[in-house]
Image 1 (cartoon, rainbow, N blue to C red):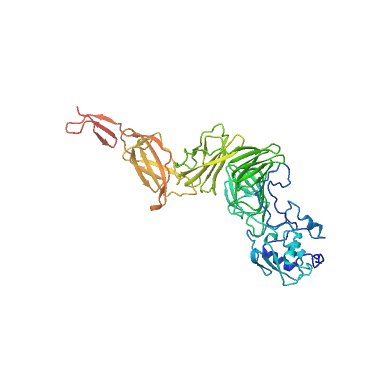
Image 2: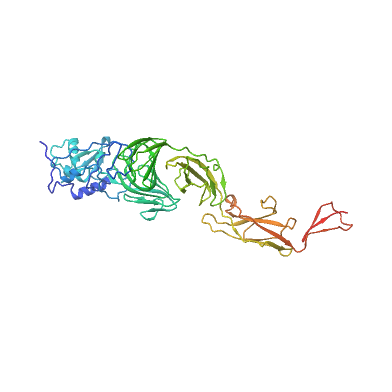
Length: 554
């Protein structure tokens, strides 16, 4: 008859020194409560009925063990569904490969553990494995007749799925505009352990990456808390959970998940079978939009399947309403265009009866990893506060009157606004000029962190459209003197552009807004009769320093 594992002073667990070294070598730290395998979807966490849960489907890697006869009460409680193990948040991300003096990899993915003096099966299960009751599986796998009498130096075979999960950290890939982590300004590359709260302000966004490759887009005006992020040895997908207090979240997993990705909101529940979907929560109401896969959306009263290409809206008590996702808008007024302003106004399509608002996103990256703008608007246009020149990618989606966001239309535009145009010092309405006193033009450089002007291009024209350019010159200083052409008409327009770089890297920015002025010369323009010895064609002007003299033959 086989012995039960001992519970005396020498059988309570792994010996302090050996156990600590083993756990450090494995990358796992002690946990006092086990975690149950995820249930089949539909999934519910047992929270308030006004709770949304988005959980990717998956099956347990290994069956739950049977309870040991006479096992401690605390150990029995450790397998309750929904229990959460305590784990250190200092564990390095991705440290799931066992290594150290007491373990080594075995065949078929097994882990081999070398028994140390004082080890017992129950002690190993309590400190190393996912639940104290796991001792029975270890005993059966290794044909151990006396679990209280382990021979030091012998080898135990362990399955990877038996190991205790450990806490992981997410990474803030990008933070655009106003993003805060636990109330403090966020920075690209910040690590996000369990318990972290992410908040985005207006026209802001964040992109979070999980160690298993899942990416979560956090749009503007959102508050979300990372509640759980656990890794299991030998499994790629994490057991992750988020609390979406308000705003939105868009998870995108590289493939079908084996572990749940849970999202709770105040309005209902959803069991996700797909890998790309959106969840939005606001004013006691939630929406789910499925871009790839399937979702079971609803609450305790009713659950409705939502397929790819469909969306659903629901409250904590109402039955979910499923509708097709609105189509992507045509962005022909944007595609391929170039703007020369730092904050241009970009047009949007006209709204119809099925479009309550637009969701507009702009990024400098085609994968929308670095957001410039994230906003919702009902206006016919939006302002793009660009911070750099070059290509920008625009994504616009409809929001229906029921709050369902549809597919997105895409457009690529260009911003060529730098170096910034100088600020002109205004001329007088009428400018007195003569041959001895050329006209002075002056301007000021506009501060810009992106580009530093080194030269300036000054143009003076006889028309506001600069079709007839009278002077075109490049200077190094922030002023220039020009002897103006005094031919009629005497109205003039001038503008200046900044130039940065040298040679092949030289770049001219856009011109400033043109300013108008009128020349006033010392002598008026007259019409005079020529003397007999003057020969000229009829209507041919003779230019003087004081104006134009029109020669007409009698």
